[in-house]
Length: 90
Image 1: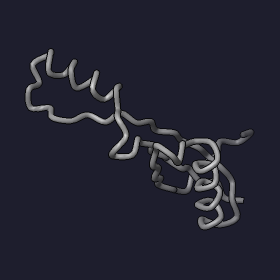
Image 2: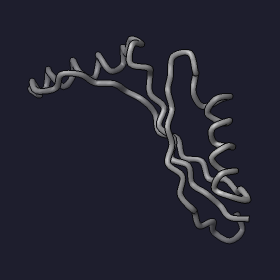
Image 3: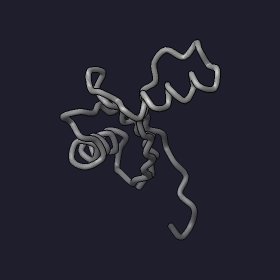
Image 4: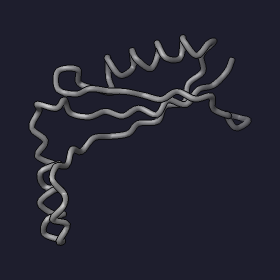
């Protein structure tokens, strides 16, 4: 069965307050980066999975995000899916 690599990006929704982003922005300004105007902090998750088809892999990753990897109330997610090579023995 083919393996796929899902590179998942999870970000707070645009209207959700991002205290970590505000702290990073403050730090950038303190370091002299006055051109920085807005910072949003998110997370990147990589999942390698086996699936019969790319469509099946996309469906599985979507369900992973909806059920565990992202909080649908305050976060949005997107992902890129590519074929992955799995090392022998994995």
